[in-house]
Image 1 (tube, rainbow, N blue to C red):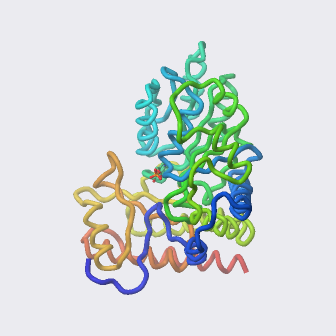
Image 2: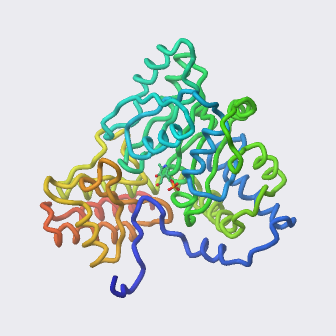
Amino acid sequence: MPFQPGRHFLQLPGPTNVPDRVLHAIANPTIDHRSADFACLTRTCLEGLKTVFKTSGHVAIFPGSATGAWEAALVNTLSPGDTVLAFDNGNFGVQWTKVAKSFGLSVDLIGGDWRRGADADALHARLQADRGHEIRAILVIHNETSTGVTSNVAAVRNAIDAAHHPALLMVDTVSSLGSLDYRHDDWGVDVAVTGSQKGLMLPPGLCFNAISAKAIEASRHATLPRNYWRWDEVLEWNLKGFFPYTPSTNLLYGLRESLKMLIDEEGLANVFRRHQRHAEATRRAVRAWGLEIFAINPAEFSSSVTAILMPDGFDEAELRAIVLRHFNMSLGTGLGKLAGTVFRIGHLGSFNDLMLAGTLCGVEMGLELARVPHRKGGVAEALAWLTEQAREST
Ligand code: PLP
């Protein structure tokens, strides 16, 4: 890649742009992870995380990627041969079931076409038919990063309650937490999974579980093998401000800073509104270009990522390569069965109107250079809407 002046535009749906303040916080000297100062750092992070997860329950912090937190959710609560029920509506939902299978869990899938979210009615029917309560956990991706579709977790909870089913509800919030409104306690979620590199505005390297009392109780009887991911040890140490092993001290500095920005400075409600505004502006641009948004149901449009279908005969990889080469911007690739046919614009994390404007300019110019059939005017449409929004907010 030849030298590219200026800032790289990291418009993947994660990892996201890390604010300079967070990078500077991470650059602080590493301290003794058994010291009082370190305990204070951990406790501050845990309090902030509870606010973002909207829970008064436990949160466990692990050094690792979110795939590890998927594993932690399963191995702490389930036993060999248990059945989990999941939805086939995106790449990450499918990947989570692969982790489950590798631990000898039996996976029951509710089919889907990837353009819609979790089907709460189908879930209700499946749970009602499960009279012996063989299904021990339900796995849902709140925001499917591969498709730009957000599932209605409250509706999933209602379906479980209406079927009077005792299964644990596990929700992946990797590309929703800190970007979309997620309500762990209100929605009766038992285990939430997330990572540091998206709405939390950190580099990759930390992952988290938010854990209900019911999930803690399940973990006392579950027999899947676990060591690194065991909640009992992590929670016991975390409560005192420490870890059972050497923690990611510098990422925790970054986390303390990013939580301060999200909670105390911008405020979560404003963070969610900002993400909605940028998602809507992006969709307006896509429609004006005459391209197709991959998500079908407007109620399920994601506020953190928009997946866009390429016209027949055009490869997203070529478009993204052109955008990277000419405009120093990374866009999200098509994942799993969407490889080649869908590209994704990440509009989450540390992001503002002008960053979105630059992003959409890069896409519009890229479409032209890649000779992808489209209409002009997507950027203009998005800018008009952002201007209107700015006017209304004054
Ligand atoms: N779940 C979702 C929804 C994701 O978007 C991702 C990664 O992008 C993962 C899980 C896996 O996270 P990680 O790559 O941090 O292991």
